[in-house]
Image (cartoon, rainbow, N blue to C red; front, top):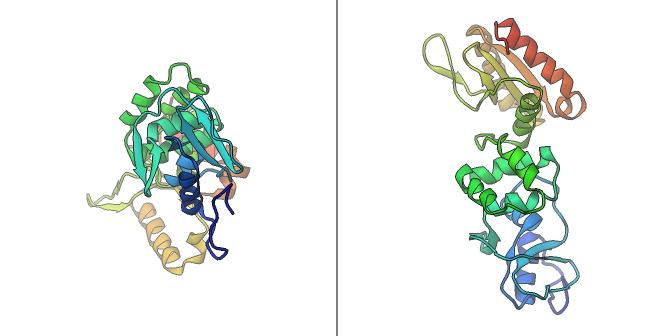
Length: 257
């Protein structure tokens, strides 16, 4: 049993689609999946909530085990995601702003921005004048870049931005001396040839990736780039080291700010 009057076969995995389908059957008033559930349906890499979140316009909230219902005045644009009615990426971003810290909201915002576009997030912000978390949402909006391809890229970029480092290019090709692209740094200052690459665990365990990294690193050196390699452990346990390395490299190349 998932919730009252909704049962599934014992062998059925209680994954997100199964639980969403169960509550769609159990709730008998119009609603959309929202907040953490919407984020999970959009594949936003933040800690999920085991409860299902939905938004309703009804004066009476549905009360069921495993369910969090949010009463709202307007459901906004409704998207179909994986077969379910879901708040739009922009509305989901605004909803999460009252639940997440700055860095987690940046990670969520980059992904949600890539699912639609930043203009869609801006429209949701403009409609959310008196919402809880709106101040944080506006602060985070200025930090977003949907070109990020991983949460660790987002974290490093935001870390450097908050430390006062000038904006860096995100996943833009590095051009070699022969005029041809040879790499696509996660973050880079192309005018002075400084690159930052975030190394996940697969960079050590995947032999093909390891070989590609060796060739890439050699290409950076051959083309006169300073390469700074960052790991997840650096991000979470010594963020100041990252800032110091990047600032030193940029200033060694003559940048001042």
